[in-house]
View 1 (cartoon, one colour):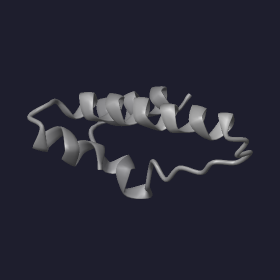
View 2: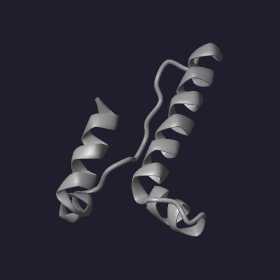
View 3: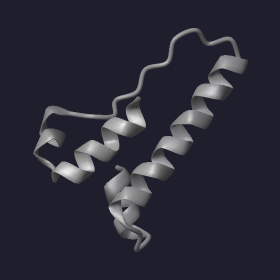
Length: 64
């Protein structure tokens, strides 16, 4: 979804991932404030390993 969003907004793929990460982080903070103890994200599928090395590396750094 982040790559599609970036493309639709004429932004680089990495910017889409960065903004997606920021939104996920905000959601996690709000969930914590609401007392939600566990939150699950689907962020990376096996097909994502086939993306360019730089994109995969960038995503792995975001996930740390």
